[in-house]
Length: 314
Image 1: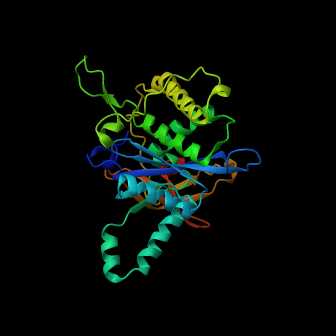
Image 2 (image 1 turned 135 degrees about the vertical axis):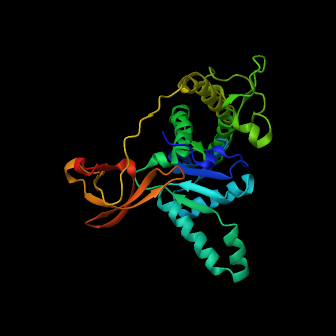
Image 3 (image 1 turned 90 degrees about the vertical axis):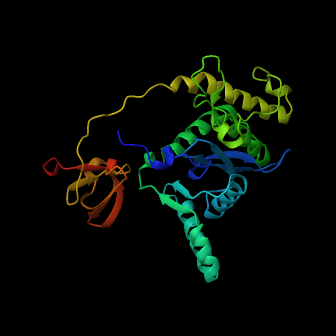
């Protein structure tokens, strides 16, 4: 198994290098009372590569403008990251182009300063969610339980934003590793220690897990959903934190000029295209995980896991 990226292993400030992804949609009400309209809202999640801390933002749609506003709110609260890892979604690519146009419109002095402090976007290859695995794991942790806890309840935009912030506190209080080897030390290390020096906790509230939602006020309903989220996290997710097996034998590396078949998840195998490796992009450990492939329709970039070398080319 390959080594972890340097951003995962080198000490740095929280949210110095982040991954970002979207989840949803979540159906929300435009206002309270009768006659309200149901609209779609989305979750924008930022994950720190070093501390695994999470930052949750709510977005009204999946556009470049909405992502830029989410990014501005994130920077205002957490500081400016040096790198943002994300997939090739149009909203992320559009945001990158928007920043480039902004820099081009500035004067030379401001552009030179902004270029030194500019956020670097790193896009993962197509059909390769494992390149942004931390963000996908954060989406899984938040969305998997959110759907089950919210259910058919249509919250307002403000109520959903409040729920996101409370879930963010819960996820940033999850245990990562024991704080010390002392058996009497019962306080585990969590992402909250890197943010405020202690776990993130909400105000004390009564236990509302088994209370009938019909007898609860709106703010108590949000608190009940938060408590149910933490209960499911404690009873279900912690059981998954077991040691995983790893592959320890190299299967061989592809090289430039090899003939490969491209995996196309939206096509049957008989219609998968063939191509020849044009260029490899090795990592710091010398292992290539991304490649440019010459096909009949031009050069495309794919992850090595989506390439099938022909037997006579191995």
